[in-house]
Length: 90
Image 1 (spheres, rainbow, N blue to C red):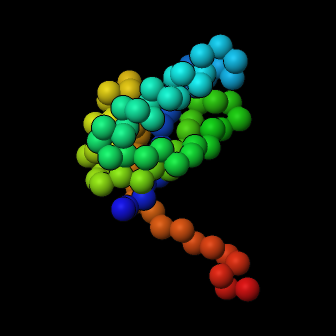
Image 2: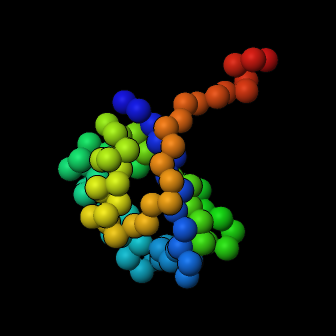
């Protein structure tokens, strides 16, 4: 399955609580993604919480866009990526 890096901008900053419902928010995103065959692998969040870089396995960029819309998440850019392991060359 193709892997994608999704860049998002949150002008007010991304706010996901660790204690007060954050797990439920993330769980709901995972469930909606699964309906389209999209798997959220992990995300990186900038220090100011205004940008995220999220890794997804998905059948297509369109599937990622559909799930983002259903999850009310912005999408700035979707790039298909592959792993480059620097230790492979050691």
